[in-house]
Length: 272
Image 1: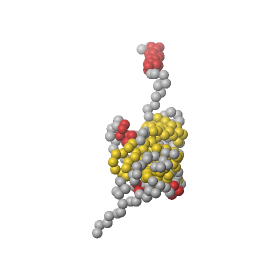
Image 2 (image 1 turned 180 degrees about the vertical axis):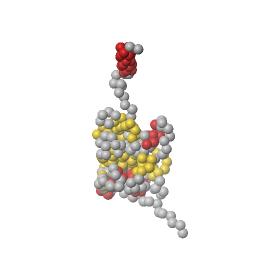
Image 3 (image 1 turned 30 degrees about the horizontal axis):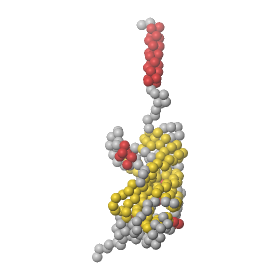
């Protein structure tokens, strides 16, 4: 075959490929020619709340509701608003804890409670924008057993935006919730939950998605990690995925009357 024929065949092939690429680009809607698939991350944005410190209802802050004046007051505010050291849980290197400290700053403002949660970006990517979820639960508390009982009242879920949280950066996030009004001699258990976002956007617009199948759990103080769970397949159930998002909580007990006694833990039964 003539050398010129090979040249023309090569030129036609190049032109054909170029035309095909132009046809594909033209078929895509404007602005979607360079859509990037969300990345998956092993670690994630982690929240922390005072509920992590207080193991049971009787170890939670007590808020007194004055039915006559319709006001709420936090007992022992100074004691509850102490500084909490988190370096052994949220340091980038658990073997070398950082000096990470934060204060809940619990405050009563009208009929609302506000307090600070702690969040740290451990996803390894700068977060330009994300929405954390805030939810509340109210349950009656049995004064004898110290256990919630009866129906649980769920408050309306809201979102709390966080912007410009760089990789490794930590921040205090202010959360506000409505306070319940207990009846006479009633104890109410209010739980405030803060859940990490299921996705966030980097400064260059890349979406980062949470995937629980890739989560690695680091045991504080041990320096060792283990993979949590078994990969169930290429397409996890979105609801189950969201249920595994990191979350934190704060809990308070609301009582009625300015002279209401402190909730007292039930006596420990000892075998004779």
